[in-house]
Structure formats: structure tokens, C-alpha cells
Image 1 (cartoon, helix red, strand yellow):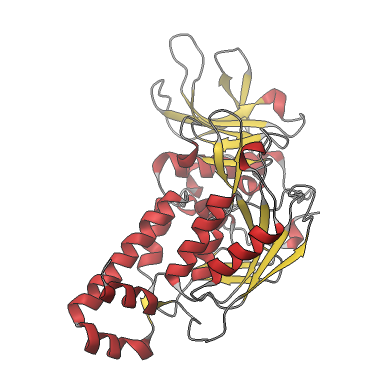
Image 2: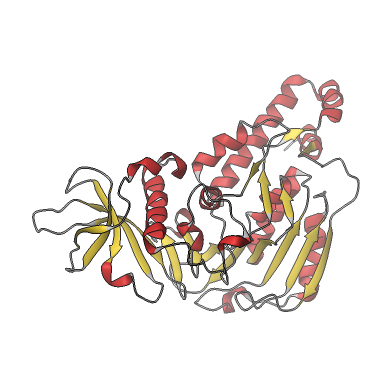
Length: 372
């Protein structure tokens, strides 16, 4: 990167990045929660150059963690809570990479806000498992009542004229394209759904993509705090219906909210038996096709079970008379939940513990009222 490019990178800013005050990093306590029994760090204020260095200094002075000794069931070296209006885009990406490298989980707590550069930092929230085939996994949570907001990088208006005068229009436009390209690559690396990328890039400087609905949680692979449980207003049929929408969206690479009309039944019915002879109940999604998408459902035996669920897209019955899973969501409150194959964890939706957001309606606004 040449000197001009470095200067442009330093000038690149997001909403509310004009403050001269740096963010503050503090050690809140040595134990965050039962699900994250690790030191709790907190970042608050604008994201500015040098914040990652300050976070690193605090981490090294207070956190004593050997990654290779984290348990097979998954764990972290620390967790960081975030409350920031945004700031320096490049620093936000470096912040995210630091969280990834140090296996630090991220959370936006109730009533906190995390915008633009802070939202990019949030995406680095990670854990680590020594279990074979897992390694680093996403560990990022948005609590009900919190706001996480994304938007594309841009040059602050007050600095644009000076940058053009100093470096030339072509250089400035090239830097902007390069940084948007970098943003897209990093979002893909951090397992954000590809459908979000075009949406974020197309927004103007006054627009944000706020993570508020079930669909938003799914597309950004953001988790709900594991101690939350749904209230009695969410029936099993509703939960399976919603999970089927997300499975279908992943299968067809579409927004879940555009697929709600694919299921017309008001309740689940028996749809067939799988290769083991288990009865599967669920919904029809299309005409019978032994080689393609026909149903979505789960084993009947799991409805009154222990909270574990194997909800899958199924083909129609084949020559043997059974239906076959095409894409499966495994819900494991006390293990690893996942959607899709686990051969490449970085490209699967994968979470330690219950993936409760999969049971939210795509259009549901996430707030504390839906939990007990």
C-alpha cells in the first residue's frame, strides 16, 4: 500500500466518525456469565486509530489464556461488550480480526448501540474448540433491546474536497472501491449471508441496516443470549415453520421473508418416513420429487423431546419408499447447533448451544417480550 493509499485509508470514515475522542476500553469483571465464564471487557465510544492497540494492551495485562487448552465443547479467552456510534472503518476491521485471533466473543447488550465500524468489529466475535474439525467458530450475540447497524464505508463529506484536491479524483474513487471490496471479502470471511452484501453496499451515507428482526439475525449469523427461552406463544408448528423458511432461504440463496408463501398449511402433517423408518412430520413445499425439494419437517418423536431437533428439507419418496434429507438444521441446546454440512465450519451456520434465532419469524422484531 503506497503513502497516498495509507492517507486515504486513515481518512475513510463511517457515520459519527468525526469525534476526536478515542474509544475507551475497560475490564468490567473477571466472570461474565455461565455461558461465557471468562473476563468481560467493554469498549465504548468512537472507533478511532489505535483502539486495537489499547484493547490488546488491556487483554495482555488481564487475560491469561492458552487457546490450545480451551475445551473440546468450545470456549473463549474473553468476551467484549460494545457500545459505539462507529468511526474508523479500517480500525473496525482490525478490531474484528483481533477478536478472531484471540478467540474473544462479542456482544451488544440491551440498550446498547453498535453502528458501522463497531458493527464490523462485532463480526469478529469468536470461540475455539479443540474438537477435531471445529477449531475457530463464530460467537457473536445481539441481545433483545440492543441495536447493531451496518453501512458501507464512505469518505466524510467535510474531508472529500480536500482529499480530491490532494490526491486526485481517480485515486479517491479507486480507494473507495478498494475499501468496499475489502468490506465484502471480510463479511464473507465472517460468514455473513451473501444477500446482505449488495444491500449494505447500495446504501447511502445516511442509511443503516439495523439488526432487528429474525431475518436479520439469520442473515448476519448473530446469536441470541443462550439463557433466553421462548414463551408459550411460540408453538412447535410455528417454530418448525420458521426454521423451514431459513432452511429454504439457505438452499435457494434468498431472503427468508420472500418465501413465506411457500407453505400454505396451517399445521404440520405426516409427510413420510426417513431411511431409518422414523416418521417425519412437517410441511409440503412442492410436488413430489425423489431427487429434489418436496418437504420440510422433523422426526415426530422429537416433538415432545428434550429440545433437540433435526429439521430438514426432504426429497419426495424414492424407490425404497423413504424421503431423504437435503439440508438439515441440527438444534442441540447442550452441544453444537448447525445448519448445513459441517465439513467446512467457516462456511456453515454453526453455533455452540441452542440456535434459538432459527425459530423466530423472519419478520418478528426481537424484543424482550417474546422471551420468558
